[in-house]
Image (cartoon, rainbow, N blue to C red):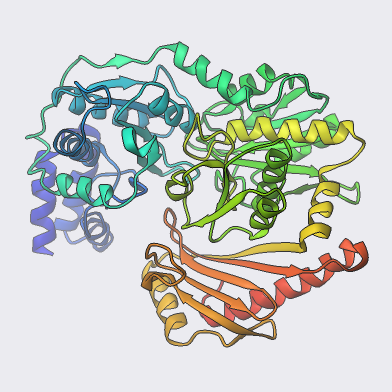
Length: 559
């Protein structure tokens, strides 16, 4: 404990923030006086340094190196500056430029200003967003302003106590998120920072990005809907207390979707996310207010963005006509992929290895190339010739020339266009999904997700699967077992396991990159005999339930 106390005192003396200094002093005093809870808390805060990886930084806000705070962010900004100055040739040939955005989470603006101050002192041109804006606007700005990098201060859909620091690279990286080895190189520069006090910070000198950039983004997002098409669809939208409400609404209205109803209780940015347990549209109950409003106004479509609006959830009136049903991310991905391909898209359709294989069949039917990537848009966005990319976790890249990342706002516009055009022909999106099932087989997907308090449980479960992999799933023999950490499957190594059975059932198991979860992605494929999609759907549901049970038993964890 003496070592932890010494490190805490040293950190305290170097912390530039009076708020976190006071917080740490209280914990330190408690630990020194023998308070066991304070000692445990202190040990966790100093268990290590919040690791900078391809997702940047993400963690709970608080004092200490294992938390998100100004001291950690200043070090990160210094590391990014050193990396750019030492490794990257400026895009404009003379001076590096970095654009900085921030959401409405606690301390986001402070972290953005600290980043601008460090970069400016290092001689880098720092441009800060003019107000709270969604992540896709920042990603757009990296390309639109020919920046060398972008920083978005956000923890996306994490719980309220978290914040994060996402980095994009311009130039040869095209505005995509970090991948190796850039993440490790930046991390090395961060580790080389001796103290926060040694990092120069300017008092002024950075600039505010003009509203013309936001206007350009809105024009781009609205422009994904083809001019002159049907626009008759009543939409309910929620931003889940995030920063996407105004921007998404403006994009939809610019595109001609004016019959728009907003969930008032969730419209204003609020870092406490008071109406939801988790601010993630995938979580049970998160879009209940939107569904209730849709029922009242007799809407035809519900769209929900997560708090930084890079994800897009979709709900439709249920097939039975009773209530509403949220589409799975794979269903939305298939609908959008088919829509763009039918509209004449050229290039490559891509999705992550944990997403449905249906997109590959859609691509083949339209004579388009298809590519699978590792999980995350840092990989999907880098596919050469990308026309459309998606991942099952509600992320869609529908306009890669403008935004090389998932963009929940442009995706919302494209979903609205598809819903309106389908309705104009007297059909529903359920009908389109049934058409795809008849043409390519019913691809049904599900997820088994286990949230843990002790991260070691995830490593233990992965080790158990590696040492004793399942021999069958839902009664079908496992014919292929890929250890993705060993590079099986022809992809860069990543911690994951993939199983394929004789009846084409597929299971992928991997730790979440952003949350304390172990995720298992399940997919079954059932031929549709005689056009009877309902019968195929029933078979698929039974098979998925059996696969889910078998995977749960193999993990040895309770979901």
